[in-house]
Amino acid sequence: MAINLQKGQTIDLRKNDKGESFDLSLVTIGLGWDVRKKDTGFFSKLFGGNDEPEYDLDALAFLLDSNGKVADLGRTVRNTNGGEVSLFESDIIFFNSMKHPSGNIWLTGDNRTGAGDGDDEQIIVKLDALDKKYEKIVFIVTIYQGKRREQHFGLLENAYIRAVDAKGKEIAKFNLSGNSSLNGTRAMIFSEAYREGSEWKFKAIGEPRSTDNFVDILKEFT
Image 1: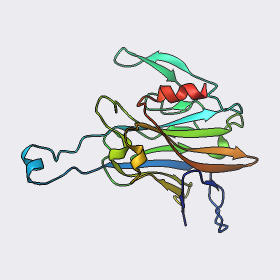
Image 2: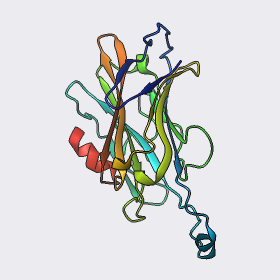
Image 3: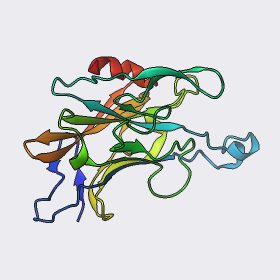
């Protein structure tokens, strides 16, 4: 049975306290969210206030070395529109560089609305296949253009991050809904996976940031 994590709580990803073991050959880190429904009363409908805004949340991962830093910042390339994309094929997994050069960690896609049931975005990682130079993976979520759109985490419902093993067995889940302290925040360090000897541990963090740009957080790890 999966563990419902509390902020700051750490678990062993390989087995839980009941002795249940997990297959870490492929671990899915799933993020989910829903936008809080607006008032649907008469005046709200009359003035169109019941329309739900689209929220574009982005899942990211930073691969850190023994110094707790992102060592490889990749390169800058041109995209199909002629613009430049930085951090391509770096130790950062994000919407413009969805697969790590090693092939051992990748983002499955970029959900721009949060629509649908279950995980809205997933980062998949082969933990046991990662080079030993990577000692920690930090998982982050941001609201794209959150400041301009006046969007923040306090307006989300059913926000969570979870870890699922290679056989589809849920290892742990960290819920963030109903937390008024998230009002005005547009980015968050959700959790981290880190090596401890030969084992991988998973820690729920839930550390909010006011920025909506992950590069501001990246500066803390470079």
